[in-house]
Image (tube, rainbow, N blue to C red; front, side):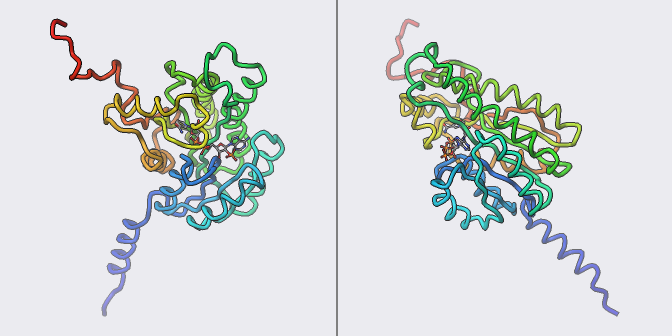
Length: 285
Ligand code: NAP
């Protein structure tokens, strides 16, 4: 008699090898403005690794832009959520929980600051913009973590996006840098609070990328050029570079990593001094 058992076992093994590292995991993505967004780079990579995705958009005007993108990744849901709407941050997770069950990962890729204050000196940041920037770019991550807690699966992973301006002065990053520094501290505190549930919380500190939000930062082209010339890899990161690292942190491959700020910046943060321009070196030095 021929037994099928070894064959079935082998097939199951092959299929498990083919499955992506986020296979069938349900993820919610906040912060896609368009196909240039860092959140879109994460979404595409998560989809290619088998995730079932729920996308959010800030308001009706943005919905039209998000719908075709949602189709490209067979999104299982698309929900409106302005993080300034306190009640909505609660109800969105109630709705998602009811419809799709437990959530395996959440990506928070949201930031805002008045572009008129992302040039010149930090010192003259207005109280209004300071509060608004911190609320949207930092507090919203804490709020999302709190509101989603009862709907997270036991090994869920939360991820937010930071920038080197939280660690060192970068021209014109101003109030956004303060928000990122607070966001990075929040990552540690949320990781500690949710650690008892088995939930991991991390951030990626991405190198500069030309996106809608970045276009508001004064002299951003100079920042891009400087990073390209002086990062260890002598290039800028792409949304795909960030997306791949994000998928790792969101997956069980990073099961022992929490409270971490992972730099995905072509090694810019390890460089202590501008590269020497060999065409202009003084002989006596
Ligand atoms: P982006 O495409 O413009 O994304 C920013 C997102 O934030 C947009 O989807 C925007 O929605 C959303 N947002 C702003 N206010 C919101 C609110 N009240 N409620 C809900 N969503 C809101 O720019 P990005 O560069 O990919 O930015 C994503 C994240 O990466 C940000 O945290 C940013 O600081 C961070 N980051 C960016 C860089 C870079 O160089 N680009 C580097 C490091 C870190 P709307 O479009 O609808 O306003």
